[in-house]
Image 1 (tube, rainbow, N blue to C red):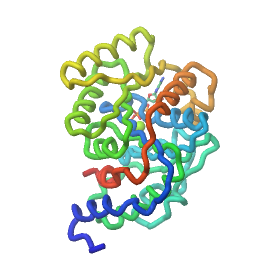
Image 2 (image 1 turned 90 degrees about the horizontal axis):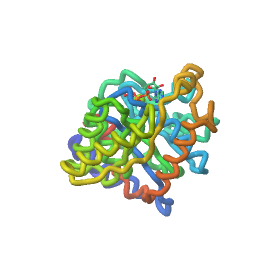
Image 3 (image 1 turned 180 degrees about the vertical axis):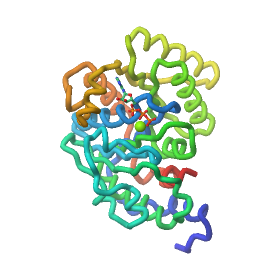
Length: 291
Ligand SMILES: Nc1ncnc2c1ncn2[C@@H]1O[C@H](COP(=O)(O)OP(=O)(O)OP(=O)(O)O)[C@@H](O)[C@H]1O
Ligand SMILES: [Mg+2]
């Protein structure tokens, strides 16, 4: 391969060359968890849905794709030795960065407070993404816990993942932001498969009402229905779990919230898996670079 002349060439080369060497790999599922508005429970849903998916017998890799305020490690109750930052800046192999947990979920930690990675050059990042794809090929499910907002990083991770899960609460601001994100995703053709999880819901009845309104708006303005993947109730145990640095799914595996998470996991399994060779490596690169 010729040396890339500039960043755009580098990204295109990455997309073209990665991960073609992954022959005969089984198909896997890949889900981006996003929201628009911050603080609605993306990381909570990511970590605990990952565990619910693992409880169904899947090998799950959760990637902390919130490169500004990473905190999957906190909800997992772990203090990882390395983060994605070490792969990019120090050449640490991905396999030495991935943190294995007793919850049946492995995760790739990121570090908080990173500035965007535009300056490091695409060649090095291309290698990291290719290594990540090769590593991820051994998993059944790949999940990206995205940051808040509708920035380039988030839209790139949505473009990379065949399934997108938008988390929202009952607050009007959260509903508006979720709608705005869906609009961008549809208009820019980022994803065909977008569904919604309502979180911190005080009653299912209320949740269904909000969802009905969202569907109406989406049908009228975006000409597409919205799929409701699940409703998760507000629970004080979520706070207790964070304080105990133990995921809720482990703290209360038979409770109402865990039951809902298992339903969501079952519905995710209803969607088709994709071959890793069809993954959009360029979009993952762009997600990390925030371009
Ligand atoms: N179902 C729930 N019941 C009660 N509290 C919840 C629930 N889900 C999340 N929370 C709480 O809401 C807060 C935000 O959760 P979380 O960090 O997962 O949100 P986030 O969307 O990932 O935030 P950010 O946008 O900063 O990444 C946390 O304090 C968490 O414990
Ligand atoms: Mg988060």
